[in-house]
Image 1 (cartoon, one colour):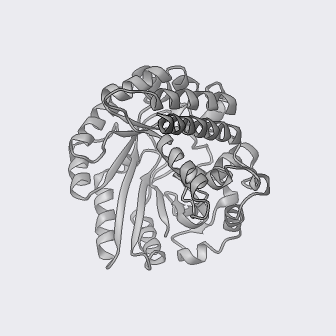
Image 2 (cartoon, rainbow, N blue to C red):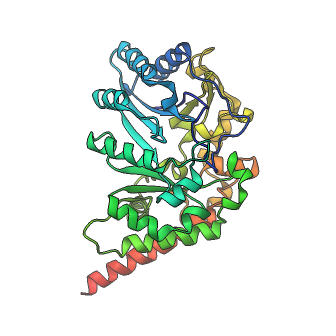
Image 3 (cartoon, rainbow, N blue to C red):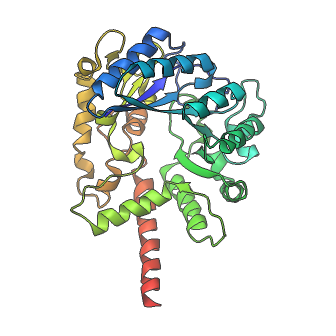
Length: 370
């Protein structure tokens, strides 16, 4: 089953200092023809499962206006015996009551990006005029929570700005009951220009470990969910204790399922393996307006992803291979221009996995000896 990452516009009303969209990324806005072809052709490919996930993405997808999404739902309802699950990844600043009414009525989920506390968020994610976007994002997060369109879950990028305030961000998460998913900044787009923001693999490992220890050993009454820690603990347990069971790793960065589970569609209908690759001509599969999806997927560029899916020789002897699966292919591509090289954050993952494994094992031993 294919999940659509629908990059409906390359435009955005913020000027994030680490935005991965490069100058080569496709701009413009998705028109109704492309919208129709995208939904109907992916649904056809997913006919056996009878379900399609759509992640509405950008740029900033709310720039399209609520009528665009009303048209999308109208098209979805014409596809018989098929269910669509819709979610939106947004900066939240363009939300309004019309959007909230529509999203609530049509069961859309909306995830926001919030880079921690106001100081860190505004340094990373200002408006184009340099103004603060923090209070606007936080306000609309509260409105989404009231309607259960978002249950207090946000994405935060880990870079030198947020890492420098990680204790304050964690305490803020507890106070405001916000669950954070921490993603590493990677070198692409604006992050190449603002290279001072980047963390080395060693620095990233240290900050993940500091954050894990704060969370794991915290005895506060309320603890926020911090991704990816729950998933790492679960997957380490599955891997170590049930080695004959097929492992289902967490998150697309480590799941190694780009080849078989995702496609990204750009504003003009170009198809790529995921949204991060949009504009990278080496991984342009075709155009949804010109061919059916099953034809587009018979592309030599996709064979590279299928080959990576089979595993990399460099990772075959690693004790955590079944968990991380050589990491994110785009991380490899952004650093080396080659997806057949393991994720440049390999050091980070291995150190984090080992640390969590040791901590959890020690806790079990202490519990058993009581």
